[in-house]
Length: 94
Image 1 (cartoon, one colour):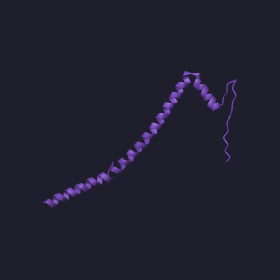
Image 2: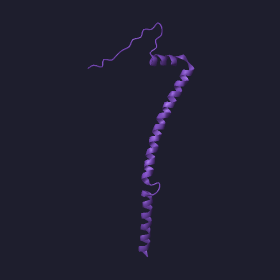
Image 3: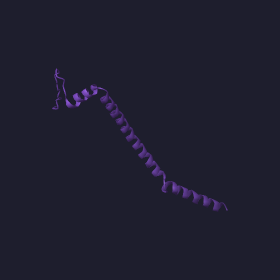
Image 4: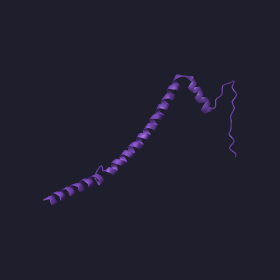
């Protein structure tokens, strides 16, 4: 009697282990999905930070001329009429 019960429990255990490791939504798939979620969360955080910076820049550009002037000076190299522009070039030769 105990042998049949033990054999039944072993078969049940083997079936459950099979489902856990090889069945639908097994342990390996869940670990892979958790890794993908972590990776996507990191990407989303970087994009959210970029969006906040861009939003702050848009607000600055809408508010006043200081941001526009800074951008024109840094990106376009613009100089005011009474200013002298100096460009420093690094020596690349060793």
